Length: 441
Image (cartoon, rainbow, N blue to C red; front, side, top):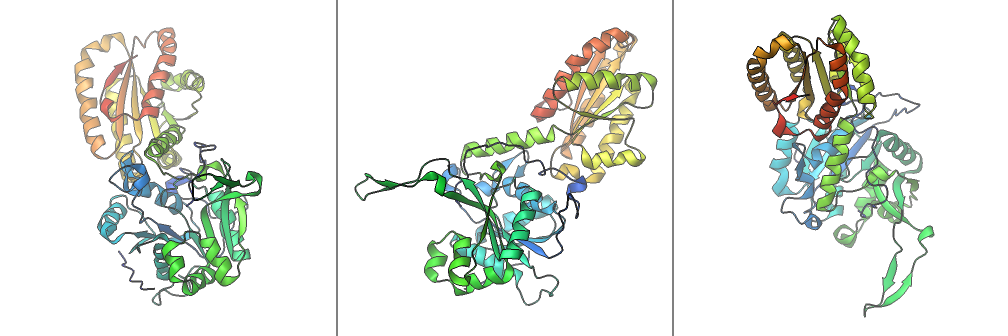
């Protein structure tokens, strides 16, 4: 087994496909709490992500792990899933040799941490083996070597921390653990002539899924002892642990969110799920003025009617700055055109957090405009367009909504549902083509 690391499986069921993975975007600054709801991991855990597939079933020339949506390749979303888990020490990504430079560029562009990229082998097992061997390199200190290794597919971006915790703990206790899902269809065997031979009783069988976890010694010895035939034609790591180490894996039924991006349509489904999750964290900034504070109740009711929850704060100063790492959408309510400076402050603060490297945050300026401000319309449009153009270069999407006659309280309160509907559509669609537009409500 020639391994020269550079420092630099079964199809998921369609059942339950898209369930919201609650923890995918959770945690401030992309991190999870080390101890939360009883989850304590006091042993070193590493991850191996085999990403050397060609993606033939997608029908695309680009391997699916490198296909992009929302401005990022799929594998970047998967890496983020593990980076946000504080008790995971490091992540080894195994890619085809010809894709090493592309993978390193992704790591640098999106500032991924804890990641080591190594060249893969000609088969899935050879690639995973390379990843496992890299974790046991002699130059690693004893503290850096993992107790548990989690093997996961690079094209399954929605695994949650709760489930990773279950796999890691079971693997430490049993030596190996793996995810399963109920079979969707009955499995049949055919004769060589193409006729039905027999079928299996579906209730007795499960689909083997990812993630899978192993103590390092078990997975290392399994690959040391397995045959060339295993490396060339095998796909199931749990089987190697059983056959060559006598380790019978603990099987844990996983959630529907473990599905795998296999076909082209799955990329669209993954994008839809992430857009939906991004739309669920919206922050309304009212300023300190009495009208702004009064508008909060009106907008909360209007957005609530659309099943959108708002966090209401006056600004992003002091303790409120935490919302820069918590929310992905910001609505600034202003009663004067001069308050575009408040929008500029949001853009500067967001840029400083580097949040936009992973997902494009949305900023919406809602201007409750007096009738005598009409002469300012052209200047406002030009200003917000310039701001939006600059922000877009930093992957921040800025939009504007104007409400006329705001000195008439009844009038702008009646407009609140329309404003909420427009803002909701901008947040959910995240359409870059509308950036800089000053929409009329």
